[in-house]
Length: 486
Image (cartoon, rainbow, N blue to C red; front, side, top):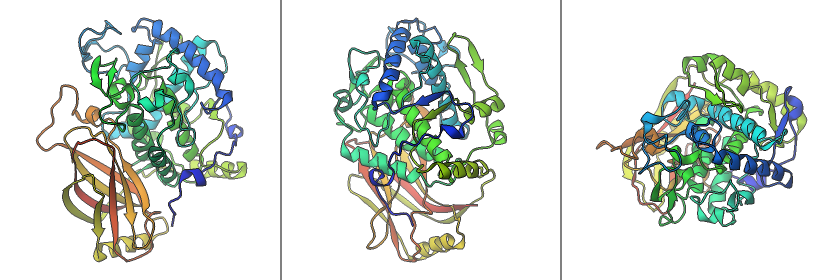
């Protein structure tokens, strides 16, 4: 069984280039904290300065590109950044296309859509900066925990004041937050499927993706720290990155999503890596509309999208989960021969109603003998048993906290299985802006692949949930269940 070891000691960046396994690579994305990446960051600075000076109706303008991810349904007062947009009735072509709406289709396309989105921004920066070999750097948080200095420099076009002040002051991410990033990255490594609520894509979307959005946007900082959010045009608000409708306007968004894409690529070329099929995407389509560097529009079919997403013209200077070229080549071949569950059959091993609010104290739920035996029986029934821990919760506002989830066996170190984050809840479920919540609240499900966290034991174990952060929004745990997927 997997032991809980922090990423600092188990996942070392090796410097391995894997471009030899790609046939059409022209560009290399670099660690934004490295000396080699500074020229690319300077190119972004040049390009974003030009983009910020463009009219917001220009497809390659800073405002237009940010709005393609999402935009508030209504701007507070006259929109000083974009007079053409006041409410959602004024949306321009391809605005608000991102995959943050809570549907199953959106969940399937999260990684693919964002890969295409930042790929087109990369092309635009290449053109506007004049740097022909520009590739979008990634912020390697978890190892390089100070935000790249060009983004915290007030004199650059990459600066944004509505960010966690610690980052804008050039200080590193606090140690407790770094630990959560490392835990999430390490847990993702051995997830054996792309799709599903407990699959790699959904898990990555929660953490570190959503976790970093809220961290950068200040949601996990001192609750009294608020900002002027220039996209909403509201005072005493959370930062740009903490809100889906304003996230794409912060230049750090692009470095963050380059890192998210790197995490995906790192997993994809391992033996665990899987991909959705084209048929699955066609059965659950999404809109893929982008702006080319010359300002023209381009729309993709699912077939065209699939061909681009899995035939990249860029590589990363190194990956998270690889160690030797020979292993990489073998694993890439193995990974491509596997696909995620296309017709999953879920069977409930056990479930228990809870109905308790998760408070500041550590929450403990004991899995008693009968249920632990049932779990272990399934674990031992197959070497490839896919067991999932499910937590059903209810919220009435978007929490500014996060919760870490562990399994605890007597006399053993707690096994981290995942983090409950809430980035996008208000947007996905209509709990923010001018929306109200029904009397039953918003029901959320968090699912975690735990086959490699369970011990081969019939002994009682516990589900441990630890609240982190200083927010006061109540989160109610309605039900815990354990399921298996075939």
